[in-house]
Each structure stands twice: as C-alpha cells, then as structure tokens.
Length: 328
Image 1 (cartoon, rainbow, N blue to C red):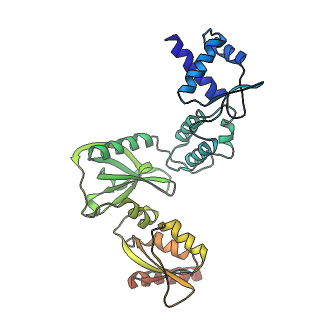
Image 2 (image 1 turned 30 degrees about the horizontal axis):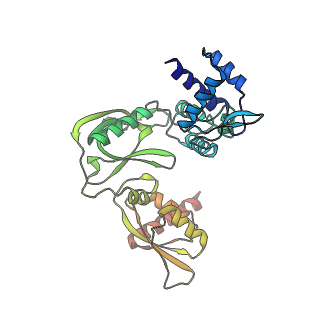
Image 3 (image 1 turned 45 degrees about the horizontal axis):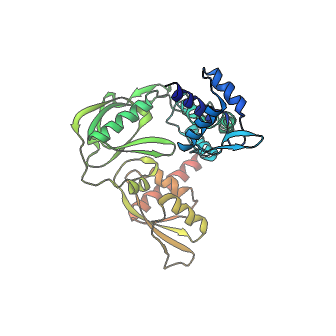
C-alpha cells in the first residue's frame, strides 16, 4: 500500500511540477517524497519512474537537467482552446466556469497554468445565474438514456430583471437531444402544446427538472439532428421548408454558405447570370425573423427566389423597417 501511495505521489509531482521546459533533479524528488511522508532511495525512485513510464507517462531524463514529463495526453494548445470555450459559454455561471477552468489547469504544470488564464475574463462576460445547470444536464441525459419525459419550470426575465415563471405553469416535454448553439445549450424536445414537431428549450432557463415515469412522445418526423441544426436558425422552433437563394459568385459568399450549411449543401451556378450561384436549403421559415436578419446582413447581395410568399413577407418587413426609420 505504501509503495502504491508513493507512486501516486511521484506521478502528481511530474504532472504538477514538470513539463517540456521544466525539469526536476533526483534530490528534489527525494525531498518532495520526504515532505509527503515517504522515505525512498534513488534506486527505488528510479524503479518507480520506470513503472510510471510503463503506464504511458512520457518521462525523460536529460543529463545535467534532470527528469521531466515530456508530453501529456492534452497539449497546451488544446487545453487553451478548452479554456477559451468554457469562458465563452453563456449557459455556465461564473462559479461553474471557474471550477471547470481549475480542472483544466490540473491537467498541466504550475508553469503552464497561467498561460491558460491569459486574456480570459469571466467577470465581464454575459453569464448565466442558474446554479442548476449541471444538475439539469445530468437529469436530461438520464431521460434520454431511459426514454423518459421530463417536467420543469421555464423562466423568463421581466423588465425588472427578475425571473418569472413563463405562463405560470410547469411544462412537460419529451427530450431527444442536447445541442450547443450560439454559446447556449438547448434541449431539443417534443412539446405537446406545439404539436407534432420539435421545440427547443434553453437549459439555463429551466429549473426543477424531474423525470416522469412516462415514455417519450415521438413526432412523426424523424429527428435528423445535423439537418435540424442547419435549418434551425438561432434555435427557434417550427417546421422547416426549403428556400432557394441567389448569391454573388464570390469566394467570400461560398465561405459563408459552407460555414452555415456545411459542405453537403448543393451550390449551383445560376443559369440566368454568370455572376451568381443558387442554393436550395432548409430553413425554419415558420418563425422567419432570425432568417430575415441573416439575409439582411448581406445588404441586398442575397436574394430570396422562392417560396414567393416568404420573399413577399421579407419585402414587407424591409418596407416597414424603412418607413419606421424615416418616421424617426
């Protein structure tokens, strides 16, 4: 038992105090083990290091420098990317973000840890105040695994920045997937009041989630999650339909289309114009405001070809917006 504990202590020493640029001498190793209550001879320590190497720790000895951990399962660049992602997630509270960042820091040395914190600011970011986030995710995952429905309270903010229970009632839904979109976490579900379709609820707005001893209700439309995410602009709900768009035949617009819809999107040269191309993509046009905002961001460079009623609705929205700006 003593040998196993000593080995764990030695492992922690290499993870915490060595890296590609920082070494530790045999004398320092002995002093560290002594401080942990373990007396060890150099031969014993070398045997322990060999045991760690056999267990996939990439420990190297360099003459006149000492021992160090040459590589880790996660590079510093990967850990930095994870740290940046955690800092940007709005559904996490500041405290939850801090806890996750500390976990990531534990995967690198004390010399590399400050590099993960560089340029990361949590206090000035928009963050959730829902302390139940991880409990919510755990409960939803249980429902997904057990094919169960869930009940929950869904909240909105009022003008006084206070949380108010939406409609004053508890909701029941059948969860089918957890999805990250626009720095927020959503549960894609079937909510009976919205009919035979899928509805999205933001997890940070959910409170008091409970499992219900009922099987999930499955909509007739089979959930193709990849397709659903592509067509669900800003994660608003509603049935999707195909929309035809005309865009300028320029690389920057090709980039935008592929970033939004993926490489599987069909892009065809416009037969009526050598300077444009056509795409035919699914959009949740039942709630078109996010889609219209996306189109408007191109300042007239992107044109809706069909369906005609959606094109006319967009034209009406533009006209009303121009009139309102003129009146102001």
